[in-house]
Image (cartoon, rainbow, N blue to C red):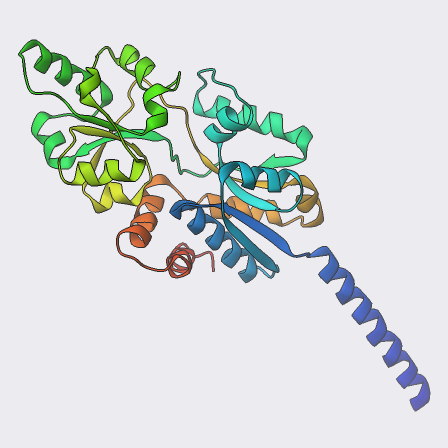
Length: 304
């Protein structure tokens, strides 16, 4: 074989290699990851972008979005991957207010989104549902661990003519049909109107920290629960819907990236409520950067 023939074959091989590389790059397209506009979502979207970059994907991060805007962007194809909550999908997107258990909610939203080309992957162990919390010292003093304990204490004090029990809730929860009224009915207690303080959600945490409230409405994985030493009360009658954080991906993106579902499921398997509460605390209370907290988590979890 002459040197000219060898050179010709080499050039052909190089051309084929470049064509195959170009095809691979086209298939491993840029993944646009969305996130909502609060700490937990900033962390989830950032850790997903870092994780997938480490797996060889090109990623673009678009977070800081409102709930409905993020959903619209996912449906229209402007976003490829988001983390969303099963309860949000059930109630906000699909307007279903039936009382369903956590698995029923997951199966329902998965079923409803499949025709829309959206796939709910495996749920994480993170349940960022509504929750009531008390200052820990106060909860321990009265032996209150559940919402039924709370109801029993309120009823006992009312019979004995005790002091008012101030409850802080946001404006929406105070009046919504699946809010405070039905919850009191289920647990069998009744607060006077003067005992219910409607306030900005962020102020509820501060008031609990300062023991200006007996109990307040919070979110189960908020970093301030740990940072302000609050005691979450167990919803022992299952009043609140589950809000399980789950990766949601456009099906066409999964079709083009066969390994992606397994990789995101592996990430979801490492996340639970206690873990996320600590990560949220590091950002909200300790003032650490989101990107650093996300990277630390991925390394400690053995994901990168």
